Length: 325
Image (cartoon, rainbow, N blue to C red; front, side):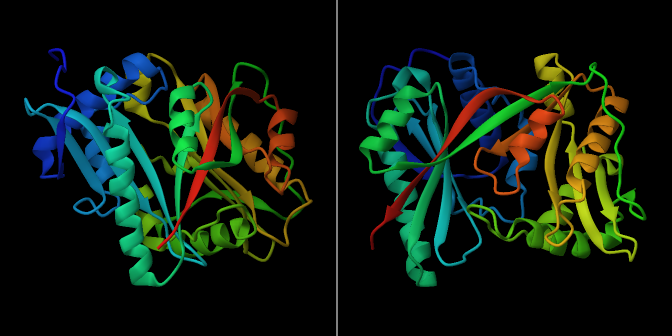
């Protein structure tokens, strides 16, 4: 890309798939400088934008310079309304035009969008975003604009070459892969599991079905523990991003979701499902298992992960700003 000498820019909505390459190029240019493991491809971005809960025409905004080059974008993810109307903002600005006012424009756009949604729902609004611990400039920007830190999250990793302890299920319990016909029961379990967690927003059946349509989805990594009476009691959802592994040259897999339904805890189900998920990832050729955890998780997840060999590799900060009318 030629030098971006023009700080002035104009914004527009996402047009169609002809914008995908420019967004991909912007994200990858940011990755070269930021080193956040957020590189992407047109195929991955197309899949991401197809999410049924994302309003592509309203909640994705692009900023271009005088030469028509994409220099920034903002994406606002509207979370299901509860007591508040929350939106999660992700944004990127090309490294050559940062701190020239574009970040302020993106933030103002997101706040306007969220206020509009808040007025329609009659609920108070919270704008949320996440920041990696090394992004000191972004942290300063957010704090200057009224955001405050609400929570800390760890990214954790565990080499799978180290022996994985044998899972021990409680008597009468069994593990199976999720069948497509069981999605509704899984969603009910998931929501009951996390309803007491920080910033909980219910998962929908449509959203869970979307996960199953992912080209990288593998049923053998989508595990459910059934109680003796057949109740869905716990789960471990594993995931491989094949394109990301090809891009990085690494062989990593995710423990994307792990939980035990309330009423079935304190029996070792979480540990057994975690170890089973790790075994399945290793069987798929994964070298390193990754996961994310709320450092204040009320069910003791951080302690569990450390006990089976996961270690922290970085910290992310959850920021929030309450919007006035």
